[in-house]
Image (tube, rainbow over all chains, first blue to last red; front, side, top):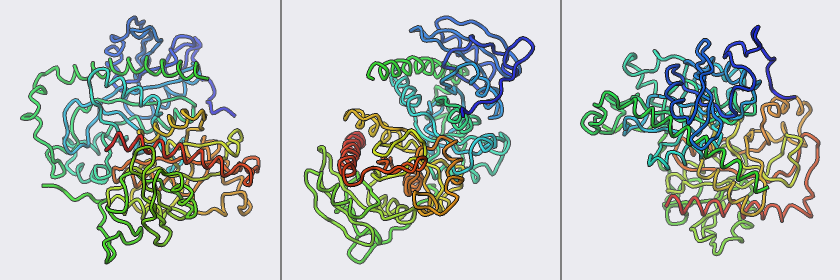
Length: 278
Length: 262
């Protein structure tokens, strides 16, 4: 039996939480966590139409520069909102979801603004456990991941590729607000985890269960361990003067959005090539 | 000040300088190695190499070192289950052998994956005990992306259409196999519903520990049984040929990974 929830719609027949109607959303959806970033991502489309805003879901649909249909729907913070969005996407025929976000790097030689692409997620959140038991792996779809890597290379970016840790509580795992965060992070740093963010580990599990492909690309907005004894790299301000530009992170997020939109095209090309090969 | 990595184990050597359990060292192993559970299969794999010398025979670890597809390559057996696999990954890491592909067999649990087909793992369910001594279950057993991509490409180059997805690794064959105690169907049903493709014995420990030690590992399996309909492959007529196909795909992929990460 297909894994699918009951269809939950409002009086107008739109999906209850996201407010999206059938036939309005593209097969591939980009998902930022930040509501304001939907507009930034939509600005990288060749054409885009504003679909509306309900709760945390700010939605646009349109086409990539090479005419591949694409939509953007913000999730809001945390995996519960992601689970709601993906479940409703299933009823709208969505096949691929790509998170386009920000996070904190766990890298010992952190470079601000690095693009970090997920291969999988450490399940430090609660939502995914409602979908799969703890020993089940949270894995990014390799085709989406390879498309994101290729898109980075086309933009002259060398991405960092590896595991994310996704968590549920900002104020328990953020260096600037929680002194013992570095201690808490040490096993993940030692195990080679590249970044901490909020949504990916649940997104991968839920997408797998719903039969969708999912991947993530995030800009490292800060380091979780810089300034602690675990950090081995150079001080950020001395080594990376470009970060003093007040718009530095804004520019990196825009670049990340362009890369994600290009990855949608590459994924489409890969799918067409695979189909014609059969 | 550099902080000690909590996962860095001590190097445990024999008097002759080989690693304690695997019985090889830097001079008798290559950076890239095929792993297989079955001790007898090491010779079958080594016989496909362009050249190969037996370099180790300690406990369950039989090792040949040689060359295949233009890349220096070794093959080592790891015995059955997570414990000897975990030891092998640890000791191989100490001697710089960090590109690892496991060649094995598995039982499919999805009705449409028939005996004789091939599964390439994207990751594994951590249903074994060894990795839990390393890191809690939040951490995923994920195949290295380069190894996974090389395995898929190598299979496609040979005209194969492999099944690509998640394996379940377990610790007790006689609880989950065609010869299992009663109640097997109830045990495997949740995994089938979760989209797991098949069940085997070593993938989760290999992938998790290799990932923690920041190596590159992948897994390819020949499906010999289907636990959904109780069918098995014709071992007399089909097994050798299909295992040879799997070995060829694995060595091709490992040579690609070796060239890209030298």
